[in-house]
Amino acid sequence: MIRLRIQRTALPRNAVILTDTPRPDCRDCDGVGGIPHDHGDHTGEYAGTEWEPCPCWTEWRMGLMPLPRLPRWLRRRDNGRDPWGPGYSNEPPF
Image 1 (cartoon, helix red, strand yellow):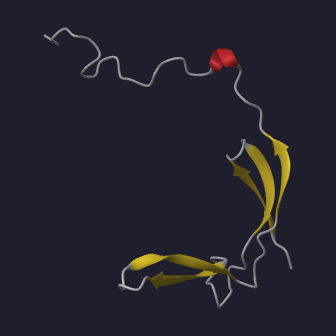
Image 2 (cartoon, one colour):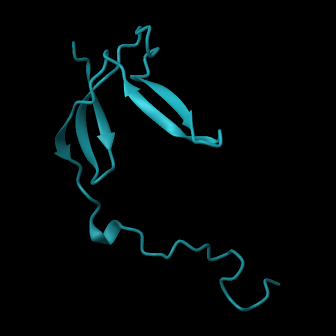
């Protein structure tokens, strides 16, 4: 049985999507939606985690609608630097 929820995604563009939700009382995954398996390389060091999806959840999603972008005149126009921070000008602060 699919338990649908509405979610916002940012990639590749801001949009509203409809997606499935894992069963919260699942004994296998504890409501996470999958079971992680850590594994190591030949030296015994951590090499990553593989994700095994739980049968209580499907990775189904469907895009409903893209969200509008800000108009060009409302977007940020600065370069992200603090005008009162160090290095903004060559003059000493006091």
